[in-house]
Length: 155
Image 1 (cartoon, rainbow, N blue to C red):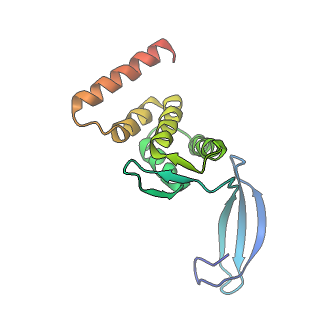
Image 2 (cartoon, rainbow, N blue to C red; image 1 turned 135 degrees about the vertical axis):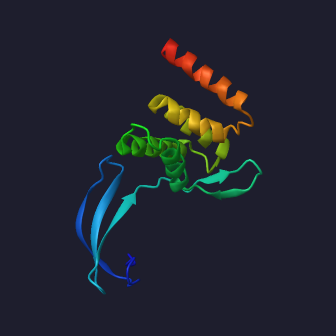
């Protein structure tokens, strides 16, 4: 593992333990070159998945993009980081276990929407407003009304 401080190629693992959500292994490392300590996370990747964008462009699946979107949607909301990590890990597992080498960005967006809907209604609406590309305030109002109605019905 390359040191993030001095770029030395070798480091020693000083401690390993499962992460809080048990989906990765947290490793404390020490650089053999400069002696600096840093943390890495190791995750299981079941398969290489390619995301097919709406314009038919293809790119490798990137978990960090989902993490960033979920974090932005839930910013300043009372949602524990652990719950967000579990949501992202669950979505990644769903994608990898679909059995397909390609998945559309639309499918991923729907998975994120469903997860956020169950987690926090405000984060859900925030994500939807970008994902569904609301063009005017009326779109936002109609969507928020439908979310409020679903909440009243307990869905």
